[in-house]
Each structure stands twice: as structure tokens, then as C-alpha cells.
Image (cartoon, rainbow, N blue to C red; front, side, top):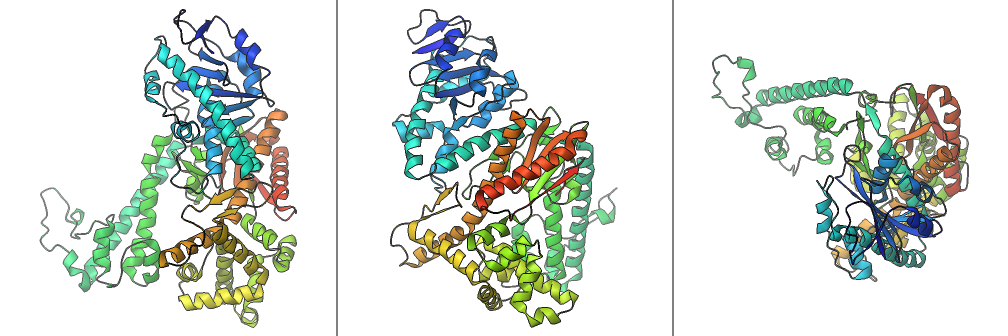
Amino acid sequence: MRYFIGPGADELSEHYEVLSTLEPAIKYLQNKEYLAVDTETEGLDFLTEKMIMLQIGDDVNQFVIDTRYVDIEPLRDILESNSITKILHNVKFDYKFIKRCSNITMNNCWDTMLIDQVIHCGKFTTRYSLKDLCKRYMQIDLNKDTRNQFIGLKSQPFKDNQIVYGAKDVEYLCFIRKAQEQLLLKHKLEATAELENDASLALADIEFNGFKLDQNQWNDIAESSHDEMVQYENTLDQLVMLNPKLSRFVNPHVQTQLFTATEDIRKIMVKWSSPIQVLRVFKKLVPKLENVNGKELIKHRNHGLIDNYIKYKEKAKLATSYGTEFLKNVKIDNKIHTSFKQVLNTGRIASNSPNMQQIPSDNRFRHCFIPDENQVLVSADYSSQELCIIATGSKDPVWLDILEKNGDLHSECADLVFQEKWRQADKKEKKKLRTNVKTINFGLAYGMGPFKLANTLQISTDEAQILIDKYFSVFPSIKKFLNRLGNYGKKYGHIRTFAPFRRIRWFEDWFPNMGFSYADKRTLGTIERASKNTPIQGTGADMTKYALVLLRGRIQTCKLPVKLVMTVHDQIDTMCHADYAEEWAKTLKGIMEEAAEHILGNKLLKAEPTITTKWEK
């Protein structure tokens, strides 16, 4: 049965019954194990647009509430309950509007969108809208045209079809959850699902809280970046003019215009922002060059023009992606409210609008992000997270011993790999040898092979293969660990992260007994690399998410004056009053290390907290 609470409804409608208060709804809802929740809003921005309808119920009874006129405060205990599971689709969106509207902090949610992403992780052809899920699980072609009718509605009464539309979304969510539950059991993904559901609320809090940006300071940096980019453009022009091989790109017929300084007229017929035009120039220097991608160009930095072009691209990236246009992301409260994509192939979190994961590590940019007035930032990141995961997974005795003693892993590995060459090397040579080993150590987490290593270190593929072989001869248990992961993925068409979460990643291109054709072998190579990479990166992602869940729980349970404001891979940033910062830093460190121990089963991984007045790398 459908019920509507609000003014302007058709009292004699055959599609629903009208209630005058929320009391009958609360009486029905308060003892349920599962309830579906949905909202309709004026738009997408929770800061400037309103929630106009809230729907809540199960597959038997649904209550549609006109939130323009009806206060949902009486639903607080239900929405904040830890014993009632609330089912939503894309919980972060609805939660932010509910919190903005009523200051209700939701708990214990089941996100049908996230759960389907967990179930089908790695299947890039699978779609996750509510329409897609209704088709997949219920064979219903959901018509979402009615949703657009809520935009610009203002104070107009809801029509019958809008009320029915809202109620049906709730009904569908209940059915979808039951179908998903069976698939979670089948694939042993219950722990991953619980983690993602809980983490979604922590990430929603970060999106809701936002991160304050000093716009004046950002503007100054943007102008500086633009000036640096222009300087490199001028340098590139000059280098072209000085090189006889590039004379065809110099226009000898440029004429000065009245009132225009001669030096302001470009003679170079190259648009440096155009890869096609740049490639034409560089082929005069390197005829076999096929593109101007960074990986390809870095091999030819001995050409001054190419070296300066690489530097120009770096400055152009800063001037465009992180120039004045970036300030369009600042919301009405002078804060950045990013949006997280929670489940990628490996389980890592992505960020967009804007992408906070790719803010330049240069602290000039990071320092523009500041805490609220009278607050400080308390941040912590894991020290060598991926290396500790590899050490734990491989059980390599040398790695474990070095990390347990907090030694310099890269130097000690270099000593074992290069032996006398390392011991007799001078400071400069040791730095180079340490870099080589460090590249392999971290490259293991990305399935690095000889081609990638050769590109990174600027050595031949044969030299890279010799270095890898030598490395694995010293650390055979690491080689065995990575080979085991790679072979598992090739054999079974999926790979998992470490217990207890054991997130799964499917390889959609895989099929049984593949490997006979050239295309199959290439696909298997890709699967093998991903199978080595995913358990390492994915386990790190599970760890950070679990830490976020524990932190949110502690903040809520103890009613702490702390806010979550950002997370980037293995780093978590919080905000609190300066007087509480030292105490909270210890708590943050302890909780993050608790999350690490929960997965690794040892105390190998440490979190390093800092207290600052500006965001730092």
C-alpha cells in the first residue's frame, strides 16, 4: 500500500492513501529490519537546491513525504538507527540532501549501486543505474522520465504519477537487495559489501564537510603557473629559430603591425599545445618518433628542444587543470566538495569535480587548502603501505626483518642485490643503485615488467630483464608470491584482495582454456599484470576504507569535535580545534594502525600523524 503525507494530494486517489501525520508511518517503520529510502530533489547541488520528497518503506508499504511542508525530524531515530538497515541507490547523494535538510546523520545503509559494483567489479560493460538494476534483477523497464518533472516544481502539488513513481522506487530497492544478497553469499563478498556500505557514509561526510580553499592564494599560483608556461613557449620558439633543421617552421614573412611591438609577433608556425604539430617538429630531430607522449619523449631528453617541451607540458598542465578555471569548483560556502567514485577495478577510490587525488604534490597548491577558522588539520598516512603488504603476502624474511626494524628497505635491498658493487660505490653511484632497486620495489605493486622498468630507468630492455632476474634471485619468495597471484588470475579469471575482505576483481575478457591465439596471449599478459597488482593496491584500499569506517564510528560514538575532510589513497585528513589536536593525532594514529593490523595480522605498518594549519603532502 502507498501512503502520502503532505498537502495538495488527491484525497480520493485510487493509487495511494493520504495521511495527516507521520505517526502511522513511524509506528510501522520503527521495528523493521530493512527499509528502503529514496529522495527527489530540485537538482544535484545539496548546498543550493532542496530535497522536496522523501520516500521510505518496504515492499509492502511505502510512505511518500512532501518535505517542502512536512518536517522529517520524527524519522531521525529510524534513519540514524544502527539496527535498521536503510536501502538506497547511491546513498551519498540522498544522505547529503537529508543531512542538509534535517541535520540527520544516517547509519547502517545498503547501497544497491555500490553492492552491484562490488559483485561485478572489473566487468567494464556492466552498468549500475537503478534502471539497469531493475532490468537486471526484475526484468522491468523503468521509465525515469517522471524524475525530470521534479525540477522547477517549487510549491506546486505533486501529481499522482509523481507520488506513485517515488513509492515504486522504494519497492524496487527492497527486491533488488534480496537478489544482491544471494549473489554476495555465492561469491563470498559479504565482508566487502559491509565495508563498502559503511565506507560510503564516511566518504559522504567528507563530501558534505568540504575543504576550504584560499582563493586569493590559488589565484596567485595560477598566474605564476601561466607566466611560467609562457616563458617555456618563448624558449621553445627560440630553440626552433636557432636550429637550421627546423627552418621550415619559421615564418620569414611576418610583418609588424602598427602599434604592435616586434617582439610580440610570433615567427614560429607551431602551436605547442597541439600534439600533431609538435610531432611534425620533433620528427625532424628523431625521424622514428611515433608520438609525443611523455613515456616516449623521455628517451630523447638529450635534445634540448624536447627536454624543454617536457617541462613546458608540466607547466601547461598546472596552468590549465589547476589554473583559475579550477576555482569554478568552489561552492557557495567557499569550499571544495569533491565527489568520490568508490569502487574502481582494484577497489581504490577515485575523485572528481574536482579530482582531489591529482592535486599537485607541490605544497604551493596543497597549502591553499586550509581548515575552518580556529581549527587545524590532523592528518596521517601509512608509511610504505604497499611494501608492507608485499612483505606480509610473500612472507619474505629479509623484507619482514628490515621493515620490523624500521630500516631503509631500498638501501638494504640494493646492498643484497648489488653486493660488492654497492659497497664500493661512491655516494652518487649508491644513489643511482638505490633508485634502481626502489623502482623495482614499488613497481612490484603495479605488475612492472622489463619494458616498463626499462622506460622508467632509461636502460635497455635486456638490462632491465637482467636487473629483475638478479633481484628475484635475491628475493625468491617475492617472485613466488607474485607468480602465484599472476597464475591464479590467468587460471580462474579473477583475483582477490587479502582476507578478511577478499574483494574480487573479474577479468571480463577471460574465458576457460584461453591462450592459444596471439590475442589470447596478450590478454593473458594483461590479466597476469593486473592479478599481481590488484591484491596489493586493493588491499591497501580496503585498509584505508576500514580506517575511515572506524574513525567515523569513533567520532560519532564519542561525539568528538572532529570532521573528516579528505582522503587520498593511504592518507586521511581530519579537522579539529587546536586544543584537541595532540590528543586526536594519537587516536588517529592508533585507529589507522588498528585497521592495518586487522588485515595484515601484524604490527608492521605504521601511520604517521601531523598537525598543520595548511594541507600538506
